[in-house]
Length: 237
Image 1 (tube, rainbow, N blue to C red):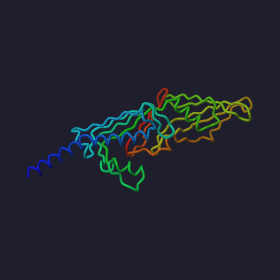
Image 2: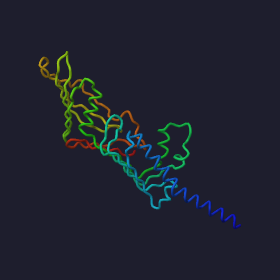
Image 3: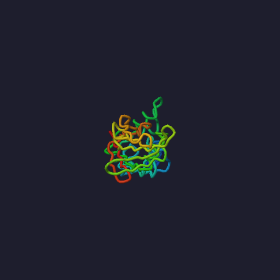
Image 4: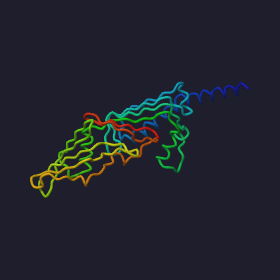
């Protein structure tokens, strides 16, 4: 009998140590890896809390806070990206013993079972949008972007029939169907030969985030235009 109780005590100590140290570490590593893939940067800080800490062993997290100074979501760079969550229910079994034969996205969706709140926010700067437009529209030369609470103006030079012309683009950043878009509201072209030409019939939208699947059911919902930047926010379904 004494040997039985001794073995039981050893087992309880081992289980307690696993709950106190191994599970939180596995959970932290999993979340950090997921967020590193999303933001395309290893330079993130992550903090998860639970009281008592042993709750993490069964998948309960009271609060999550993650920061990345420079992140890339899809095709656009975000400055000061922050992810905050509360009252999270995590599938620890799926993290430690992932289901075989499913995709990484399906695995990620299974890992977060519920959340009281989950919010990703960040800032799109004028330079970030300038770099995006320069990459997507190869003819643009020396693009300059100005952001104000009223909208966005972009000016650049293009080559038309071997001559340089000035192009002015007006637009705004919108959140639609979970993605972020640069929506053009006007486009004009001007040079010595053509004078000023209105090209509004060529207006369109550029999807800034279409190349990434947001994890944990996050979708971009709001955009707040500010002086010199756009503040964007994604929340869970």
